[in-house]
Image (cartoon, rainbow, N blue to C red; front, side):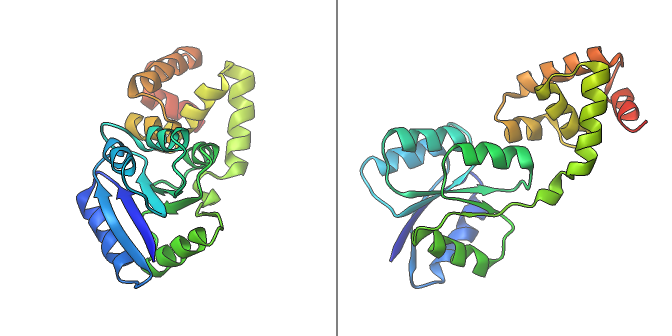
Length: 206
């Protein structure tokens, strides 16, 4: 029996995932937590084979939760649940030395099969590189790095704005505060010599 704990502040999502996993006789969801702190506290006195961790949670978010589990030498497998198919957030998650990365919209059988594969010792990462086409980004990088002297971080944020992401989404993807993202955006506007986001997007598409 594979024992699993879930940390996700969206109750319908966590209960839905638990329902899917419990449909398989080899899987047992023993705990559902609404944030990372609750999960960390639970694992101080309990053991599980695997934890499924949402990235965006109140009190203690996914990355901070994973670091605490690693620092406390918790031996369970760690799998990130994400609603994003984005290069930046994927790269950040890989840096956390996790065992798996799953999209929240994955189908039920794939979820179950992935959980079992990770428990067997495999690492599984769902990632759609089509989310940010490399050809377009390459042209965008060269033009704006050379002409407007944007830093790599500013270029990264400018690209996400160009792709329609909000400040909160960008903050979540890059593990930054919303205030930091807003500051970078102000600096980008200044360097580009434009007054607002509409003018910035018009320049991007010129």
